[in-house]
Length: 64
Image 1 (cartoon, rainbow, N blue to C red):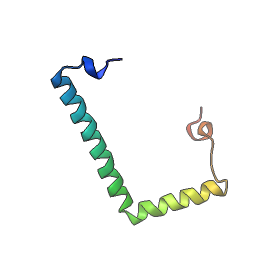
Image 2: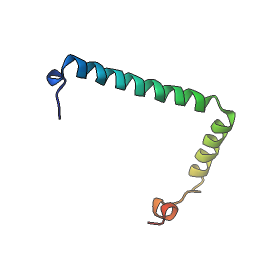
Image 3: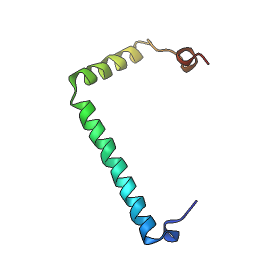
Image 4: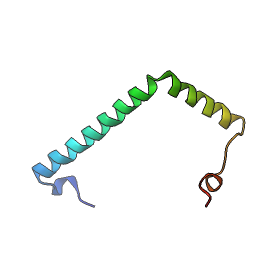
């Protein structure tokens, strides 16, 4: 594993740039998802299904 102190200035800048870019992209996707009433409804339904035991095992869903 590379230590931060071993990075060149350009490598460090690129690392920070990618980290910030990935974080902003994730936040933007969350904002889009959470602003959708249909998406929020699906989350509420999924939580209700989970609480009521309406779930499937990973192996059942992916046939493994």
